[in-house]
Length: 289
Ligand SMILES: C[S@@+](CC[C@H](N)C(=O)[O-])C[C@H]1O[C@@H](n2cnc3c(N)ncnc32)[C@H](O)[C@@H]1O
Image (cartoon, rainbow, N blue to C red; front, side):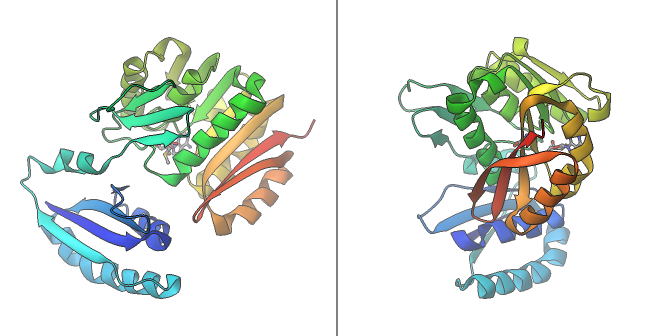
C-alpha cells in the first residue's frame, strides 16, 4: 500500500479533494506545514497508484495553472500492509472553534483543559472528523444557532450522520433530542460508538430509516451531503421542517450554490444564512410560513 502526501497551496486544496472524491478515493487534510500549504493524504495499492499517477499529475498541473500556484510536492511512501489502515490517523488534527468548542480525534490528547465542550471522534471508515470544510461550516452554523436561535436546538434531525459528529456537537451545544440517519450501516454503528464515547447517546436516536420513513417535524435539520443528494431530498427536508425551523445544508461547491438556492425556493424554502470556506458553501433555510 502506498501513502501519497500532496503538499499543495491552500488555494488548490478543495479542487484536489474534489478530484479525489470524484475518483472514489478517500482522503484527509493533514497537519498544515505552513499558513499557505496543506497536506492532503490518501492511500492506494501499488497497481492503482501506477494507473492513477499520470491522470493525477495532469490534474495537479491543471489545478496549479488555474489557481496560479506552483506544482505541489508529492511524497510517496510504501507502507507495510498491516500498518496502512491506521496511517492516516497521524494527519488528523484538533479543531478549535474560538472559545466555544473543540473537536478532536479520539487518539489525540489535549495538552491542557479547556472551559468549553470537547467532542472526541473516531471516524473509523465513516466520514466526519471535522477535517473537511463542509463539516466545519455546519459546526459554525450550530454555534451561531446556539447564540442567536437556541430554540431551534429543541428537536434536531441529522441527515447523513457519518461519524455522528454533527449530532454529538448539537447535543453538546444543548440540543434536546436528535434523530440521526444514514444509508450506510457501518456509519450508524460507528456514530453510535462515538455518541457513547461523548456521553451523548441517551439524546440521539440513530436509524437506517430513509428520510421519507422518518416521522415528525424538526426545529433544526442538518444535512452535509453532496449536491445531487441534497437536491433530491429537498421535498423531504421541507416536509420535515417545523414552521419556525431551520434547515442547514452543506457539501455544496460555491459554483453550485446559486442554482441550489433556486431549487430550494421551489420547495418553499427561503435562504436566511450562508457561510463560505474556500470553495465550499453552506446555507441556512427557513420554510415559508
Ligand atoms: C459528507 S458525509 C457527512 C458526515 C457528517 N455528517 C459530517 O458532517 O461530517 C455524508 C454522509 O451522508 C450519507 N448519505 C448519503 N446519501 C444519503 C441519504 N440519501 N440519506 C441519508 N444519508 C445519506 C453518507 O453515507 C455519508 O455518511
